Image (cartoon, rainbow, N blue to C red; front, side):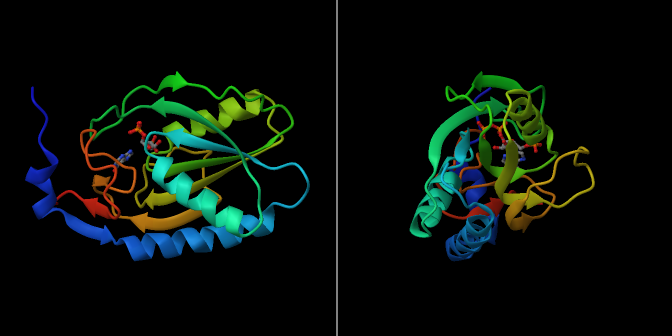
Length: 185
Ligand SMILES: O=P(O)(O)OC[C@H]1O[C@H](OP(=O)(O)OP(=O)(O)O)[C@H](O)[C@@H]1O
Ligand code: HPA
């Protein structure tokens, strides 16, 4: 079945957060995070691909501007794979850097039902990370989130609808839109 093209849904989509709002939220997050990380060893900054990439880049620069150095690595765990509902989590890439004894800061685009970040967090702990914290650009507001996961740093809230843009995809399209939209209700 051929995918629905972005151009067919974008005109009817609702703008939820514009670029300025998201950039402002990222600056605020950087202030919060900066205050929580002191010491010589830079935190290991793990971007959750693909969706976390734009947010992680912006956040990393904002933290650099505030004098917090970061060591970069990334991972890719996906359970949506271009669909609008989640399935079993598939690990496509794990970080090459050892996590043993490290402070880990995960950066992802959205905390929705929480399965992805819970599994990633547990894996980081199993790998011996000293501390694992999570920064997400957006959290979706509903009561279906799994127990045991909460993001320490949250940029914005989004409604309980399928959202896309700023890293999040609509059928693997629209990730580089510089704002967050929701599909027409
Ligand atoms: O809280 P959850 O319900 O588990 O959903 C959140 C996850 O889903 C998305 O990833 P996706 O599986 O779409 O992979 P992608 O980033 O490669 O698109 C998003 O980037 C989060 O990692
Ligand atoms: O609403 C969403 N949009 C894009 N990706 C997602 N991953 C979980 N929820 C979503």
